[in-house]
Picture 1: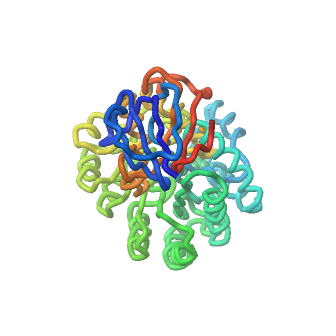
Picture 2: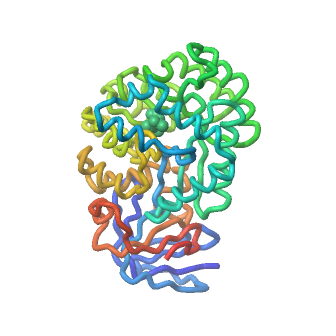
Length: 401
Ligand code: NIG
Ligand code: FE
């Protein structure tokens, strides 16, 4: 089926800029973009049907490239504690934090995890998200990590969006390995990753490099195993302190290093050289009431690609709107709306290793796009949440109107 979409303006986000086409037309067939350009240059192709988009602004489908959307329970009780002055690190040291979500997640069935995650993913989809990354990391033993990764795969099969799964077994130390972090890393490398990868459940490998999680040496062992298994890597780095985790990630050609408030200019140089995307997470920055800003000038100066994501998780970013993160990226991190929008489209796709097929509207790429009833692209960064009128197209088919 060949479809002509017209009466619209396009911000194609090619090369990470708006790349605006006014009075545009798009031809899709077999789930891909066959032609895109100004309507007056439309080639003489016979379309099976024509859709009038009513003057909408069309952007790529949004890409949320960092979430922990599958988990049991929630941590609103800890939120109340933190508001009374107890810090995230103190709560973690008392057995709360990630460990409390691990207990709730281990206790939940696959079906329970699926149905609570589906609601959260559907909330993201209402914002125009058509591609989503989800990490495991609240299981921390083979059976529980497998359960999470299977739920992640099932979300991609049952919902109309592209889901990439990341194994984050090196997220925190499980209670069984108390004071034995090196042994847990060995278990990840020798048992968990090989088994989960062999079962086809893993698209990428992530770890949490932080003084309250794993050291750079421990993370490097995970990277070496990931490389051996042919899996791309990502890293939670420089969120609370500066350990040069992002430089380590760059040395292993990581797809991305994420958080990064405490990264240095040297880290930025290493990431730029490796093509490692900087994924900034304004929701976690806001929710933890952090004050150290990511070094925007160094990132721009060295040409590091910047992505923005929700980090949807129960502890540090219970964020159900990627558009709200666009606003926070602009307001808190001083990004321009154009940079922020590139951060949830083309650069976010690159952070998932999908830059060749997703994230911008160009011939040959997937026909994933959103037609927004807005006045200009900056409206997407301007409104604080809410539900903007839109039509969402995935693989050339309308999934949401
Ligand atoms: O991305 N930084 C580590 N992991 C999550 C938080 C996880 C949690 O507190 O449950 C994050 O912020
Ligand atoms: Fe995270």
